[in-house]
Picture 1: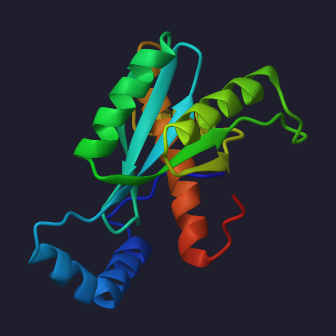
Picture 2 (picture 1 turned 120 degrees about the vertical axis):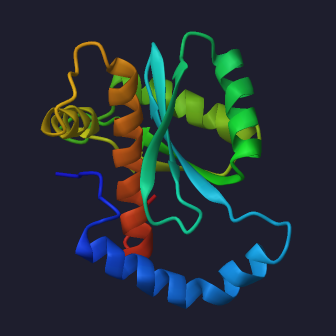
Picture 3 (picture 1 turned 180 degrees about the vertical axis):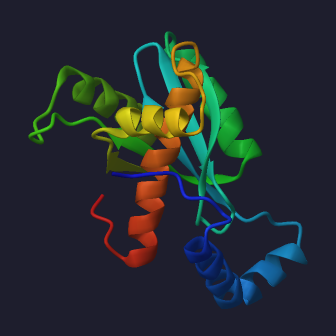
Length: 178
């Protein structure tokens, strides 16, 4: 099952060092200019809340970021526009809620409508299978000793981070299907 990776783990530390060395000319060039490195934004779309997560500029690690109130799509689109601009987001990765057997659900249709709206507004969007991401998010929080009953916003953010981390891991290994 997916989990949020810690920067302190040996595997990620080695991966971070390798990617920094590999990308040093790019990092150094960007550091010496006013241009910022871009990020990816992960989205866990729900009816009431929308969890967001951001990647680091090298697109290695996903971090929970923010939760939006999902009741007004117009306000959500306005807030996303601001986040995309401020955080220099180049790609939005949206959780694709399929049933356990891979079938479409009512929520799948809602998410696809949201994705179509994002694409209509000119955003680069990819879908990532989100099956069990909320369950994994709750499990991660329980392992960290965080109570899940009143932390629904944090669960949504953590779920978005799990979705984004899955995408990032597939992207660096070359196994991304979306």
